[in-house]
Length: 163
Image 1 (cartoon, rainbow, N blue to C red):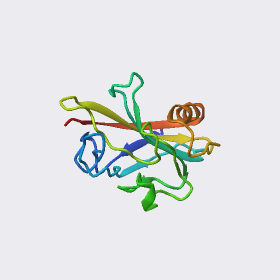
Image 2: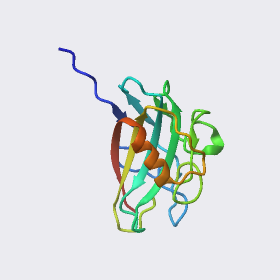
Image 3: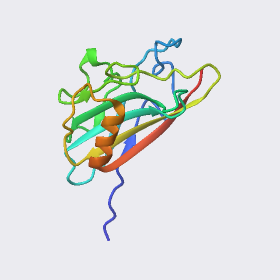
Image 4: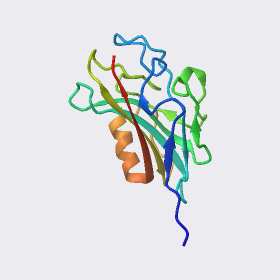
């Protein structure tokens, strides 16, 4: 009997607690705003692209806060390097699209919870059956809708941030 390997997301930078490296450098926070290194393995057969999101369900908005939305990562890519969320550094794959976050700009914006409040951040990688026909101006919820319509598998890690 052959047991299929589980689609898995890992990070050398986060898992447990965020550090000042990942924290935002805005909204009253003074972090380095560096997106975490992420790697994944055992994508299902038929994967045509990947997407990565980072979401804070605890944000005081009534609908959470999307901190990072990247899609159309080529199927042969299995890692985003630390700092890939800084669109000016061109560290993400050239084909990947980093759409706007809930802060209204593309790329990564790190955690910045209100003082004293611990927030939970969910990073998810999606193995998709297609490339998404969206551009960088797609809103995070619209990207999420398209992800969920085309997902073959997904894997997540959770970390917390408190200031």
